[in-house]
Image (cartoon, rainbow, N blue to C red; front, side, top):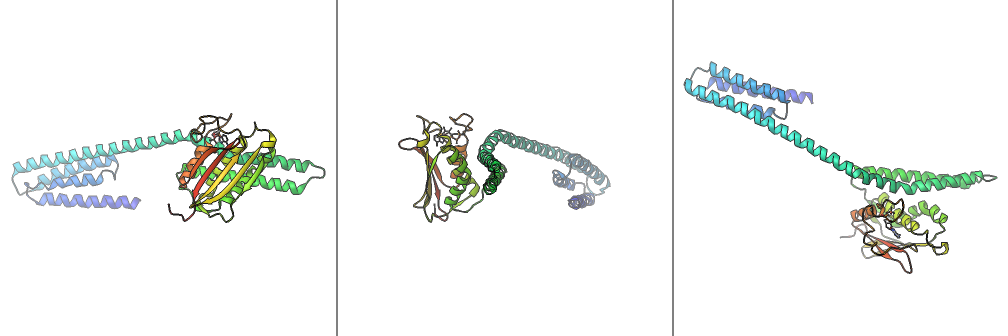
Length: 346
Ligand code: ADP
């Protein structure tokens, strides 16, 4: 970078020398010194403010020197030209420096705005991280508990303990992945797109939720379509959507007698889309709640963030899909997600 500044300074010096020679050898009537304006304009923005001021002073001095050294031409015309050239140099330097200062102020204000926007979205981001990481953390805690129980038996069941430890490890990796994705979201990175099998995503999400399902005595019905076409998607984000719907379904159960607790997950192809349906026999929606489900921070649950469905909708829509909810019969809710199949024309 240093050599570039030196090159620019050398070019400006050469140009100044050229103007000085032209101004000195031509008659006093010819105001070649106004070309010093070009020097000022070249220097502004490239060099610090005080160097530009020094340069403007030097140009004025050279103009005065040329005017004294020039022999040909009328003296009165020379004095008028001298006044015009020096004031043009001075005014140009002053105006150009003001423009640069205004630009710098605008830049600083823009940077401040960006910072402010970040601070306001920080709360939302924190809530989303808390929400998305909660699932794997719950998984880690339950697997670690199970692991301790298997180890505590007499004799310890090492095989089961190892399986629980492996589940905890998988959940820890999942939490890491979620945090990585949230961080990339904060850096405005484009989501990854790969061919994803929705059935496989459902399987992975179920591995995480299995402990919760068992603990809450919830029966699971799976109806995953065979040979389901792939969707072009960010796998981790889709995992967040499925995991979130599953968690919501589980959380809708506590008031339902254990015998009636059921969650049904189905996938299917419908024309150019794949459909995922998560149906539960939980409490369902109160009147007027259905319209508000996807609103940010709308929650009816104690300790809820009201952001899970908002994030889910944002993810689904970013994939060109749709998410909606309907009431289940005789009770509960059904959440449906529709995603365009990979290669489908939209
Ligand atoms: P949170 O789970 O933190 O409350 P969500 O955005 O995931 O945030 O959900 C918002 C609200 O939508 C919940 O508080 C709940 O009232 C309602 N909801 C979501 N899923 C279900 C469901 N399966 N059954 C009944 N209500 C649901």
